[in-house]
Image (cartoon, rainbow, N blue to C red):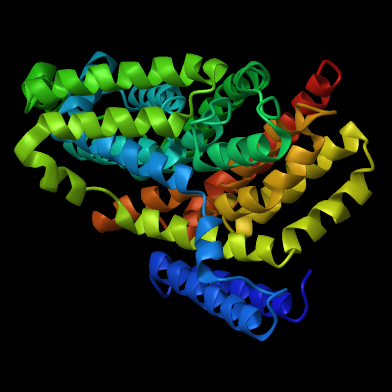
Length: 440
């Protein structure tokens, strides 16, 4: 690592995360400020010695812009679909057959989150399901907090088989391909190895959470159920044009994400084309749709990518890679154990996105000899993301939605449910991935 500039960059990185973790300032504002300070340190060092530091342009180039554009595009698609009434239609369609039985409603909503997490990233999934869950639960006079907590947890682990299921997946895929070549990351292998594991985790999670939240899952009064479900689902559609456009968009995304990788088509490219064609077709509603994008998350990610880029410029990430390689020493079993538990625990206290950015080059170094390793890292950072509430964006979205309703989910209540689940999931995943390492 470059000295002493590397030390200053580390201090900026750690300081930024301590402030963000305190939850006393806006995390997007702090991450962008941290990136700016890192850029200033690099610029001063470069001015003193042109073999040290870097220009700000160099730092900006290190940001994962493909991932940022993908997230923006997905938020546009979610905004158009939400504006059409598509998600309200789906929620009512799913809820009606449950007959107001809270446990059945809980199971149906969690299963739906599991399915859509294969196409939408975790933040988008919670932005879709969170408001709908609150709306349905309030109408039925049911506590929505157990739903939101379990949906956030499910969105995280359900995303692991899909390259577009979460931002960390995209980051790991892009960096592995960049460093190890087009064959470095195998989306088919990711799905084959992690989809069964994801299903196992769902089957484990449902009975545990239903038991954990049993006291809060009281059935609604029959008269109230009749009042809520008397409305036909199609009445929820506000714009048939946008509704059908959204359906076509989601179908195109699903097909392209499933088959496009085999032709080398990047998910961000497809998402950008689909999203902004949708905007063209919505015409006068464009400003309203763009205003609904979660720019707070976008700027948070830009700042985080910039900070991690600074760590890469000063050589910190290369040093981490050398250290890890010396620990695992080419042993795939040790590599699996290390790359499950260490990234998972780091994701719990930092955030799974920067952990992914830092450790993706290490996974890439194993890709040629052990193609399963990038998939191991994908599993670890996503499941580690709910060891603590601050570990993943989906958790923060769930908590923010509850707070907007003035019925907040406390840090302790989220952790009380999610932390034991995450540790159990990590143990199950370690066993499964060690088994898979015998075949791949």
